[in-house]
Image (tube, rainbow, N blue to C red; front, side):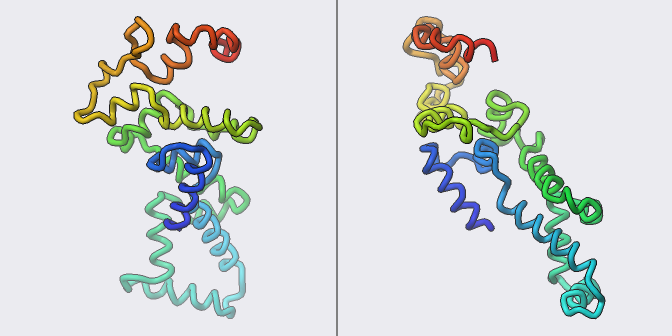
Length: 219
């Protein structure tokens, strides 16, 4: 599924015209999709549920029992799948007892681990996205609501740091421009030119912003 995830990522970034190095977790939330790996794990658990309910004389059940009886081996289907589930902190017994809710259980665990607060400190883009753009990490709906491709692309660029505001371009400089110096150059406020300044504060855009007062200030 790693290769499939790369194909999925290229498809999303190409169609939304956003940077190809945009973090996979951000892309998933923006388009409202689950990780490919989580879908594979959901299918695994559904298959295990089916195995548990077939007769002991059936070949798949015999193979499962054989795999369970050879835990001393370094590898094996049963041991490998247990390690996979443990990595994502998914309790197989709990999941199988909630067969109708397996997909939600798996997706929730994946999101919890992908957005673990302990790991965000070392991941600037993920941390910024969660702190500023989407604190609740809710799946976004604008791609399915809007009909204009141009509007979809423009919103996606702002939300994923695929823009050319100084808050982002300052990171490209060598050496990097200090955050406090990434100011807006088209007004005299000397604020950091980030998404908030661009959308809500910079007076140079007041004439545009005034046309969307309800959208900008009442949401």
